[in-house]
Image (tube, rainbow, N blue to C red; front, side, top):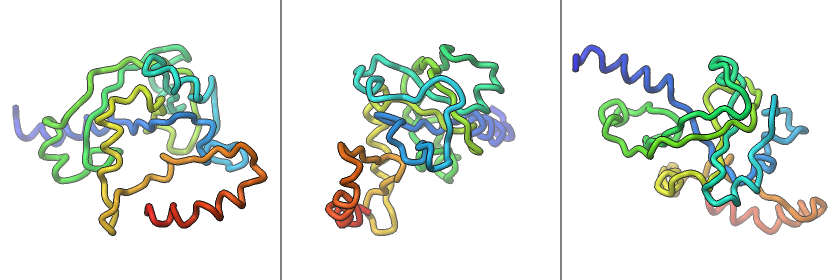
Length: 184
């Protein structure tokens, strides 16, 4: 292959790369709550706990409105997704990525049915999927990245807590604040 084409091919791959956000239940993600003014549901539904509990059989996804409109997609359409390792769990951006991305471990191509569309100012580059559908080796990858203290970096969007009784929020925060601080 012509070495002059390498940067163009790399750019093309990054342009077609999406950040796949795995979740058990989108309804519990804080920035999706109506009172937070963040991501809003444009059409369809969020991924819910039933999708997660369907043990890898419910390959559904929620896509951004930009992708949805640009590709002329409809609810119920299927899109092909493939997981690929990279140093930073979003895009191919590091020097190692530039040199080795072709040799990175990739999953089989998987078909996901679109069940929802979200609207947000950065709605083009994230696709939400049930965590039960993600190959295990790609779930583990997210815990390997270290922060400046040498500890695994904990992405805030990967964690949410659902209380049985919302009036117990203060007690929950008091009880677990130190544990969370230790983890980061």
